[in-house]
Image (tube, rainbow, N blue to C red):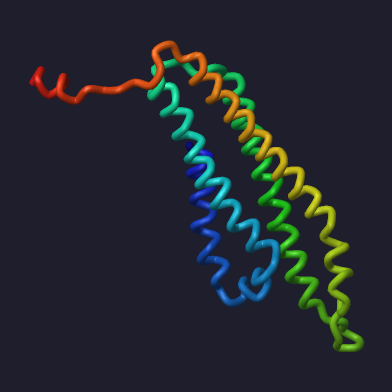
Amino acid sequence: MLVALTFYGMATFEGPMMAIRSVNVISHNTDWTIGHVHSGALGWVAGICFAALYYLVPRLWNANLYSEKLANTHFWMATVGILLYVVSMWVSGVTEGLMWRAVDPESGGLMYPNWIEIVQFLSPFRLIRAIGGTLFLSGFLVMMYNLFMTIRNAGEGFVVVDLRETSDSN
């Protein structure tokens, strides 16, 4: 939950910063924006959902979590995966934005007039992004297995609370 809140804080700081004209000139339509969106979507939204599921599923099925070790494995896979993904996109985006605007001082023309040069230069960052995304997705699958086994091993099944019993005792 704390990691998710950290990503929320970073994304909400970064969004207004990217709206500043001098920053937007570099970030607009680059991988930086992709990294920003995914830090919010995967870091914050998915992270807080993971925390909620780990909290709710054992309580709803009145069972212990199948494996705390798998939960820790998922946490580190997801955290490292999203960091690889987001940081590679931030670096790629800044590089991309600067390369688009690089001017040759002698001719006054663009230093990279052929956009494919920029695409090729950024390919290592895209590979890191793919590795990070795969790690994040693999961690998600570990979580799903852990929660499935938690539900499967639950003895009594889904817990139904009768609210009438609690109100009669007052």
